[in-house]
Image 1 (tube, rainbow, N blue to C red):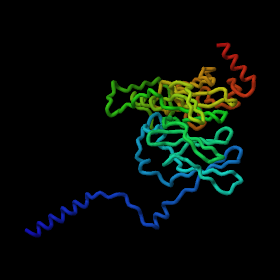
Image 2 (cartoon, one colour):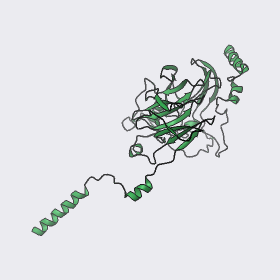
Image 3 (cartoon, rainbow, N blue to C red):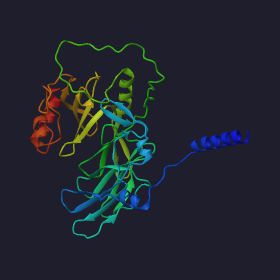
Image 4 (cartoon, helix red, strand yellow):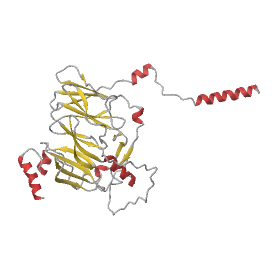
Length: 351
């Protein structure tokens, strides 16, 4: 009887040990030294080749980074809490150096536990902008290169779900930012909101040689969540953080200034959305505005493109995307010369 009781007790103890909570363990010092190394910095120079930016990033992503929330919509992978791509790679330190100097200077006043991305020099190349991702969202910071000092100029309410949430003005004293709408709707939880009807796809008999894309929209709930996550309002912010609203809520996929800084070109995503191609083939409209947000001219309207031949050389059978460069300005009437400005004024009179 005592033998049976001893066997049962040992079995119970083994079961108890099997349920013991064990935390992640570190390897031996030799392996840790080999694996836990510091990455060399990435290097970015300005166009004048007189300033060098060194960006440092962690060797590995943390468990927190790997366990973040993720929504896959229209070809995007989005963190719905922070409103930036869930695949974004962050830097955690910045240093600057003048080309002729021998040592780097640590940028002071960086955010605590920084998650830095979307760095860019100002047009006069005296400042640097970057975004920092907090636990709640994305904020904009500015670095003065001469003093190597960083300063936050917005709260963490920027919308980086469609890429960089800011663009420098040509005067280097102002930036346009994409912010979350003030009356933003609540995201739909597809596990709780039952569909109101079937999903119906129609075919018109045309051959469509589409690839198999990932992370596409699948139902009306996805469409609504896509709109909520990509909608932004456009504000002008100066280096002191003062805000001025420029444009109301829309699905802004691209913003750029004319070379003289007097006009803004914005590309917006339109309906209908597609369940078989990603957002870069959704309908889009490109419009030129003055700096008060007034429409100057609609320069391009792209329809939904679900049918396109396979191959890397295949293109839309329409106008391509525009960029605020000399070639665009020659076609649209927005650039340096008075002749291009006059064509803008002529288009106003004609309308």
